[in-house]
Image 1 (cartoon, rainbow over the protein chains, first blue to last red):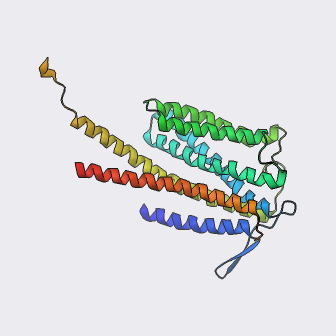
Image 2: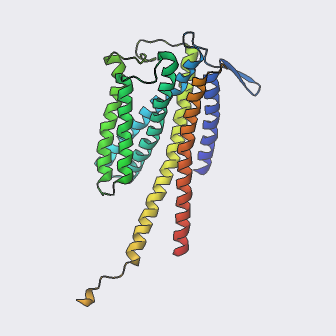
Image 3: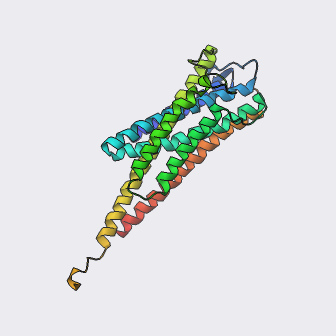
Length: 244
Length: 43
């Protein structure tokens, strides 16, 4: 298992280096090999290259939130601890990717739209989605009730219902945000599409690895908590029944 | 590669956020290992 993890780390590292090089340069060299990267967009220029981090981060966050939904529903049905840990982990990593979307978006908007932020439907709904999952994590961290996983799973279902709304908001409302590059009638240069998909693959592999590490950590933490609880029970003095 | 401060900022922020999150995982793991060591020693 440990060697599989190491192999995945190496593959993901190489993929991330290749994806970033392809996103930043129209042509690049890795050792003796020459690769084609994304061409420079004619209207926006090089700042458009933020697209190759912004969009894959959003897709990865959505993917993680859907896994979170599946794990939460499974937990509500079966009360399976593994599903609960998976839900927590995917929400946490999903929030990290969603944070990147919310930060890189305004950095891209400033030179292109002339403003950092506008309260249009896509941007506002993404912020609301982020806030829902941040509240989910706060609930998991600070609530000590035994019902916390059930409450969190219910909140996760609400959060996941927002994901399609965020994605389709640019179809249903007039927004400042551009139309989707895929499935929305838009077109994209095949080289740009290739770089976009490679970056998504690299980010998805990276997210998988981080989730794996975080899953192991959470499992270990729960085992340790159980050991502490057991030790407290053993150390507790016997009930003074004889004193009655 | 054309240098653009916004492009640089977006890529830098992305990796800073990831590195910050990975650092929290490493710190939590170190704390957990210490706690496990303490528990084994006390046992």
